[in-house]
Length: 429
Length: 100
Ligand SMILES: Cc1cc2nc3c(=O)[nH]c(=O)nc-3n(C[C@H](O)[C@H](O)[C@H](O)COP(=O)(O)OP(=O)(O)OC[C@H]3O[C@@H](n4cnc5c(N)ncnc54)[C@H](O)[C@@H]3O)c2cc1C
Image (cartoon, rainbow over all chains, first blue to last red; front, side, top):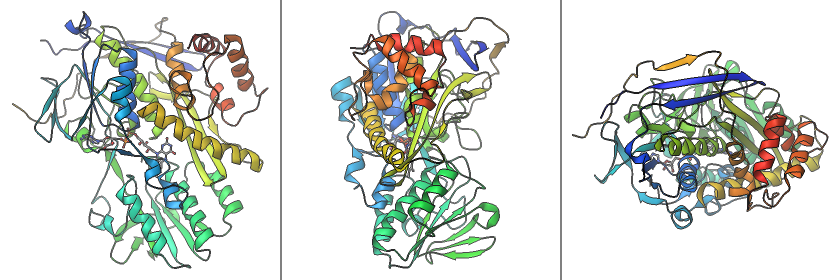
């Protein structure tokens, strides 16, 4: 079978939004006539789970298999609330069985270790192989251990990253509980790009909430590799209101950039000297999940370039990539973005399997953050595909107002909770 | 034989026909799936937010247009509604009104 590929693109710039469509000449295969085709999805997070579900919703004739390493999904969203003590790990742990029960997705627990795009098969660590007609890879991120001197897997047991929810979250929570009043909690935030741009600052907020209630003489010090951060004005305004004098943020140029981690002494080296914390949370540099790197889906910076219309890999044909693992233009690495991309990629795979071009996408992101349990803030955006990639629709989206009544912040905190329940159900149930 | 795939540089195969007049409009169902993240798959929310089913197209369109112009105030819907053109809102509202 010929592997040559012909891709055409037409585009239109109009009304501030540019739309793209792709037509795939070669993908009008036998499976389009009659039998519906096989989709394999690697990774059952907000990206992969949603894609598997929506592929079946869009075409119940498809055979959809979801490969996931972990028995249940511990969400990163709301893991900061576990650190703050207002949620438990059980509250953020979810089953994927609804995907099978409600949507007929075949669930396979295992780790994908290889992809053969020539014969279109995925190999699992168990040795099992799964054939596919279209593959979707949504492995999230992996930590770049060793990228910062002194920070390897062993160091993470002393100085947790807690940037994958689960045992790391529990470890950091235990350290916070064990800390004496009057200590300093250091959070080191990485340079862009990384998973969840507002995440480190929501974390500082939730830790401050815990400290304010239980260890009021303690402080939070954020050492940042960056010069500014997501929803910065809103966070800093919120900190002044809720935790005056408790949270200090140091930008990269003012000594926030960490060059070395001494995990045993809970000390971080910066250009301006060493900082020792009672508890240290080091959020390290990241890259696309290992399988994406192994399969040649990522570039030399460790992220996956994709077509902005179909989310098909620009490096490996027949394989789509979504979520934290990709370059998504203006979209951040968020659960909402992964859920939105999943629906576009699912529809694209369904179309392509049926010999049709992918539809023009519209994508959305919403990231809520809690400054305190009753103080929510948000950033949102609507995105379209343009010839230059995924762009935000001009004059739309943006952040919560800089000044707002307490009732508005409270309402956004209620919506933070609603968002969580909603995305968990839309992705997994 | 099984091997890990190596990075394959695809031939630059995108042919951009700049200025081409016709492109598909964004389908209303494509837009609507973004609503489902919060407002529930198929518009059936599980979290107490407004359902999107069983609502008259005109009512949905009016709300979204009012959010878009700030005539009606919400926390986040104003910012979201501004991401859609009036024509897109009309098509979206029409589609949502057909959901069961
Ligand atoms: C502290 C924190 C707070 C956050 N808060 C928010 C928030 O409020 N809102 C928001 O939108 N986003 C939030 N995020 C970001 C969000 O968690 C991610 O953007 C989202 O999880 C990305 O989804 P994904 O599907 O790409 O990856 P993931 O959710 O990481 O899912 C990937 C899945 O793939 C599996 N996997 C990986 N490799 C393999 C393999 N080889 N074989 C089998 N399975 C594999 C993994 O086990 C995992 O289940 C937060 C993140 C953090 C760290």
